[in-house]
Image 1 (cartoon, each protein chain N blue to C red):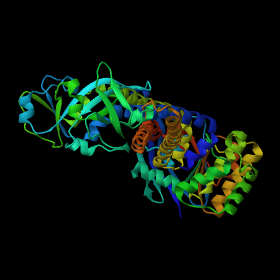
Image 2 (cartoon, rainbow over the protein chains, first blue to last red):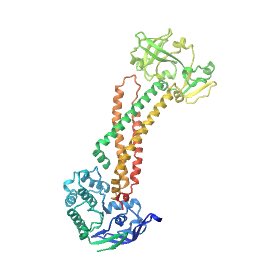
Image 3 (cartoon, chains in turn red, purple):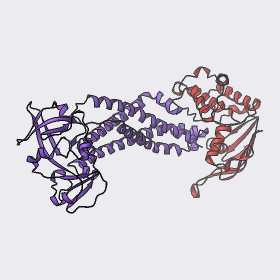
Image 4 (tube, rainbow over the protein chains, first blue to last red):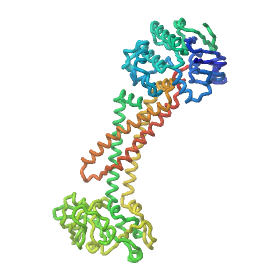
Amino acid sequence: MSNLIFSSVNKVFGSGSSRYVALENIDFEANSGELILVVGPSGSGKTTFLTIAGGLQTPTSGNVTLNNEAITRLNRKEQSQLRLNKIGFILQSYNLVPFLSVKEQFTLADKVKKTNISPQDLDQLLTDLDIISLKEKYPNQLSGGQKQRVAIARALYTDPEYILADEPTAALDTERSAEVMKLLKTLAHKRNKVIIVVTHDMRLKKNADKIYQIIDGRMSLLK
Amino acid sequence: MFLAVKEMWYEKLRYSLVIELIFLVSYLLIILTGLSSGLASLNKAAVNEWGAETIVLDKDSEGRLAQSFLSNQTIRSTSGTPISQYSSIVKAKSGLKENSTIIAISKHSFIYKNLSVIDGKKFTTKGTVLVSDIFKTAGFKIGDTLYLNNSDVKLRIAGFTPQATLSATPVVYTSFTTIKPLTRGTINALLTSKKKIKQPTNALVLSKDQFINKLPGYSAQNMTFNFMISFLYIIIFIVISIFLYILTIQKLPNYGVLKAQGIPTKFLTLNTLSQSLIISIFGVIVAIIFGFITALLLPSEVPIVINIANIISTSVGIVLMSLFGSIIPIYQIAKVDPYKVIGG
């Protein structure tokens, strides 16, 4: 059973007159099988929350545990290892490697993790995201939406326990957004993943098991 | 290596241009190193062939053989094989001529024993000479009579010997009696195969390397070549640094995302090191091939020596400079903060 817990987490940037509280006293819990939406306006602290959850930043105070292990106590190398093995990031800036074809974007993960996912599993994932026909294409041959779906597939490919998504549907139309959210929901429910989606796209609300809202760094449970 | 190869294949034009640049600089480096070795060899080949470790010269000679005139007292008090030196233009009736250094040695000396013969035989009687194989290349033959400028002395070629050049002139070996009319019995130096000898009075004792470094123009020539060669190594370092730095700066957002996904920094830096290695190895291989072809096509008068030792040392130098050139890009990759790429 996987879980991600924030206990009294604060994140403050700067000091003195330039002091800015990005997150204030955040308590949060996500468990296996849950698709959680974190909504809020731009600049409310959503991405800061997500980057702390993924071990890319450390909180100013408070504790973050992943499977009951405090990730704030891990060193950089251990945090990197954790992200590689347990966390899949779907980022707003999808930044696919420009000189790798869609298929090779996944080979890269195999090379680093020394795993070899079966071609059938990869094809199934690409079919689910409707990008199977793009396998041999390079990022500069894809539309924004296609790139985003490849980025999503890349995050899901290594079958991580946790999926942290930052505006995953920003470049997608309504139909595609619904498909992606449906896929994430299926993954959460059928494969027991912890999925946290940070967004200001309120169209995604209906797929979430829980919805949190962040405004001015303060988090509240909406649903 | 995976990322390195894929990127180079995808950006064929960009990478082939930098490989071409490294090839051109490496080619120039190989040619200059070859010329440096060749000219150095022309200056000192004979000294190496003699097998002497210590050379005794007149104390006022400044280490120059031609300016050294040993006194009888020094000769009597010092053990060593004497040599006499005389410079002259040597001509044959056919019109062939060579600016040469005539060296007189004893038939019983270790120098005489150390000389090898590629054609004919060593000098044995008065008036016979063993000459540098450069004479053979120039068209001289065994039995040819040689005439010296402003002298009645006649010499007959008995054989040819390799590696017989001193201060970039071919050497003519003969006996003391043969050149006595020219040198009037002057002994210029005493040579010994011992590394250390008792310091004679009024004499300058030099090791072989010290003697070679004092050959006219030798040090200045080497320093000039070394300066040019060092500069080319620096150029390789700068070219690789700038090229990989610009490419890395362009790819920093990608590196940030890859790091966010947990791809280790080590994997990414090894990729840059691999690219540097591939660029330099490709550039060097093509440069070596062109270097050998150039050495074959150049006329024999051009003193270029491209040998395995030179090639290995130059190649290792180029590859090392290329790897050093990837230090700044690697530092850029190491300090990329994935959080800054993602924003927040």
